[in-house]
Length: 191
Image (cartoon, rainbow, N blue to C red; front, side, top):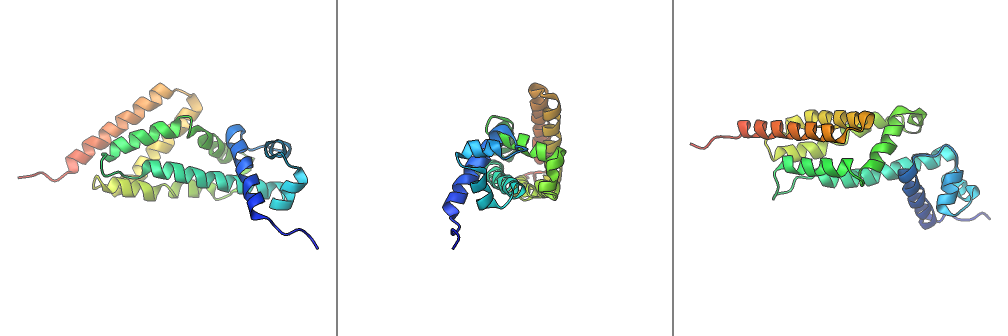
């Protein structure tokens, strides 16, 4: 009789593998994940089935973490104008806490790892529209979610390509200024 699956061990291994991949990128071999978990390749394969299944699980787990973190950052707050929320979110997304996710999913977008998650580009776009629509509703403009997302994604690509943080941050602040102006212009006037 074979061993029964032990979900708590699998979860612990997945956490350690995800932490390693976020810090160092997706490995092309199992050995870095073996070292990171302190277990054997055989044990990783037992719990995940194959290298690709393990990497898919790591990507999925990292994406859950990213959605939780970035989703909370994009959530509208009653005590804060939404452009200020977006500015704070941008700082966190492009800072030390957000960079590992941007690196990992940028790697996924541009490399052969796409085959691990073929629909990633669509999902990575559409899953941010809801939180942005909710936040922009506070400005009366949920319809601007696609525009805001396009600006964020474009500036993240620019930042990744050039590493010119100052210029890209200024561009985002300028965009937020335009968004504030647009929100004021659309606000009903009191008579």
